[in-house]
Image 1 (cartoon, rainbow, N blue to C red):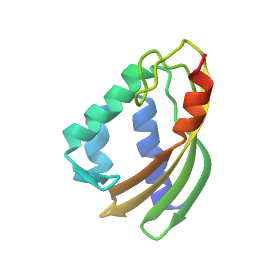
Image 2: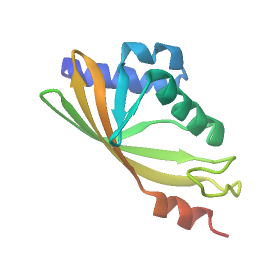
Image 3: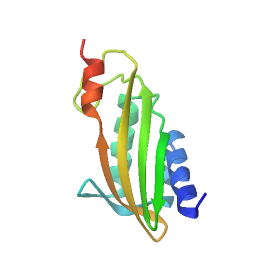
Image 4: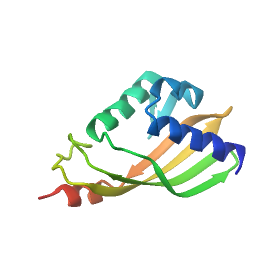
Length: 128
């Protein structure tokens, strides 16, 4: 395991354990998320919102590629939304979906995130 892979997996552990105050150890302030500059506080709020909408959210690595200062990952989520997730109403049903996410690191921390979530899969599973 490379040092960058270990750092990335530590970041995911931070998310899984809901240690949002520790994100400063992993993420630059500000961080660019899908072409928007977010303060660390704004990024923490985004993650807290996700957890409020999906309390059992866990980040499962399906595919991970590390090259230089870049990380590409396919994450799998098996969870049960309790609130509107990305505008899609919850139904109480368990769902499964993927996120493809690309990171650029600078000085050992995440400087840029490009994320694509399969919202169509979420919508299909939550539609009665």
